[in-house]
Image 1 (tube, helix red, strand yellow):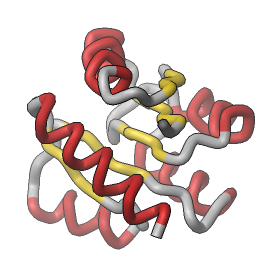
Image 2: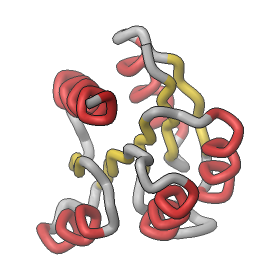
Image 3: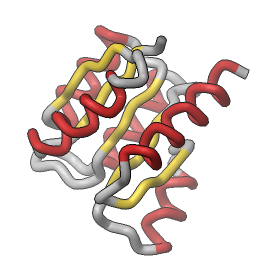
Length: 122
């Protein structure tokens, strides 16, 4: 069991991803904004973050940069509707361990979560 933080300004997406991740036995915390994500990372120290790129207060890229500055080993999966190849490349260069396009299937999300957690434990 791991602690996972879901960062997305869409309550529907957070609720859906939460249900999927919790079904695999993980503890889930939610953040509705970039600033809440950074604060939540300090408080909860999740082993994994699921991060949207588009939020009102700050870019997901900025959040990713801040999380990696706080902990260079932070495991972050970016989950975004922006599925351009250039976006996936920028996400990888910024230090995310995975990039998933929305909508993501429950199986695809669980597979990515399990793989990222396994890599982090290695």
